[in-house]
Amino acid sequence: MLRALAIRMTRDLLPAPEVPRPERFSLRAFNDLMLPALVALHNRANENASPWTDDEVRERLDDPAASHGLFLGTDRLGAAGYCWVTTAGIEAEVASFGIDERAAGTGLAASLVARGLQWAEIQGAYAAIVHIGEEDHKAARLFRRLGFMIEPDRPS
Image (cartoon, rainbow, N blue to C red):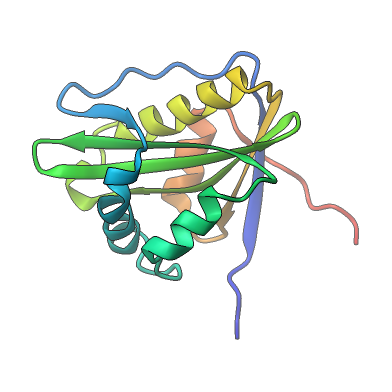
């Protein structure tokens, strides 16, 4: 199986970025009632990624090795975006995020990621990382605007 090359981007978290929430959206912390909407949104927004199931998401959330900050952006039509951040020690990772087509270009993605990073800062994280596909130029622009920088390749 071929695997897309990933780029690692990093940033210091102190302070976490502040991004205004687009007016038509609400940002909500995840709860179990949102699980079907989250899974459907991920599977729509990340067509090139492995699809999620409810059971897989529950299993990830129950992982005791990390704390999970999971936030959804919603509008009158339902879930429009999400950002899932994990922390382990002093490092946070933007583990997954996705935006529905109807929310593209609205600023919701930046607002959700910023909210996730603020949560990570409260958890005690000092730095954040994200791995994005080498060809994912939209994600690279988003994370650069939020203060992330591409980390140079590490020697093997």
